[in-house]
Image 1 (tube, each protein chain N blue to C red):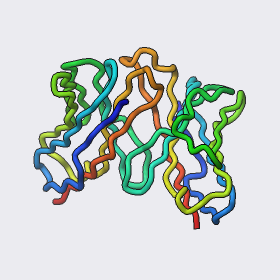
Image 2: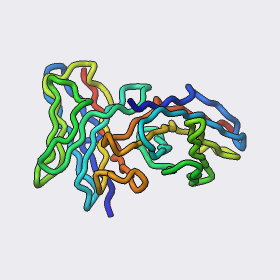
Image 3: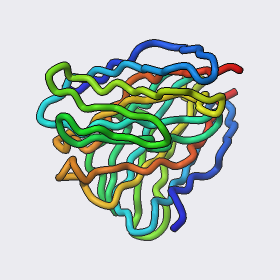
Image 4: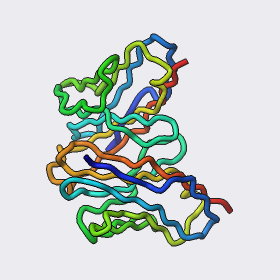
Length: 118
Length: 112
């Protein structure tokens, strides 16, 4: 069973360009989460999606950032007009359920995409 | 809201030394608690978890006990190895907010 897959692993963009980060959840998982890790900091929640629905985007910046999880294909985190402050590692995680029962809940993380804005 | 506080690093230990990384939390409800490990250049791997008070999670020689009275989940290992050098993250999940809340991470460096 393949784990969570993210690509690209490394992405370099110039200021003003667009960045597209892709995440394929584990087989059988229908819940996807995106987190951002700034240098030397912990992970901060950005957005939680189920197929075709955004459930919680409370951690997402209001401008330039968007996320989707279409019926077919990977989840996409899109950053328009990137700035240097967007340089970070972006991690995707997936879970099989919504975690209504915390005792059985786990999120599985991908290897991350390291975005560098020059 | 929910929050996790970890001891600041870096923690530098000699091989075979005893490790403790402190973690305390604030949460509504009854959280599940996790330790994740991040090796250099990699993503997060679940190290261990505990889902209710007094539960002990353990894996690869690491242990942590869910202490509700002190709202703590300290990570311990009796004898660390160079290969344990990594960043360790404490996290919680309550189910009322569908996301993990992470501490800032503690970098562990183990030397020969």
